[in-house]
Length: 288
Image 1 (cartoon, rainbow, N blue to C red):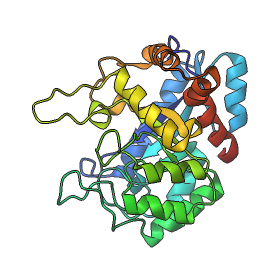
Image 2 (image 1 turned 60 degrees about the vertical axis):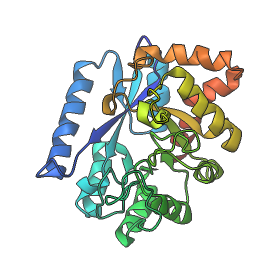
Image 3 (image 1 turned 90 degrees about the vertical axis):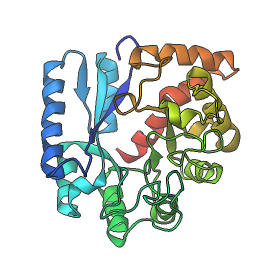
């Protein structure tokens, strides 16, 4: 992150509901790991809970660390646990992962691979959680949420929301990506989608074709989203610790290579700065 000149990194407490007997307790252990890492590396990085703390870290020459949750099911359908996670420093929550939970349904129907779920969206409790998250100042994250759930968020959200690590479905047909209409709706509300470096979210090979997913494919998604929804709704999601390694963008130190590629494709300094940090900071400034 230092080599890549990072301003801020989201650290997701990811919990697989089907592999953890006690998801809430496991998430609490992950929080302990996060704060232990922060204390051990306090000379270089510091956790943030407000936008002002991001600015302070920038002035102090430190990377900011934002604690997030990737699986709303860890709250065990209890808004009190959501509020306690906020008190613990959580400032973004991915409503679902790959399984249905008490809040809503995931991208993919479990009975049919890579078919979007356009029927099952947020539950009544999911709508209640969304509204409480907005009241508290927790950013609503729709990555992994079903298509129907996305449009429920559009309907009920009063503030910008994000897709923290999702690409363009028109470029790669994986249902984890957003349709052009979703991208436009996200842009209309002032939200951001974070480009995901996972190869299978970047490229869908034709029969007999090799999966090819490097910087050129990342740029292709960025160009498409810029065309249909504008550059202001684009950020960087990476998903570094959750994906098959992208050979051309294997870790945080390689981000300047992507910057050079965008300049090479004609993006302006203002656009690149927006994609790399300013668009996300705009959302953080409004909600945190």
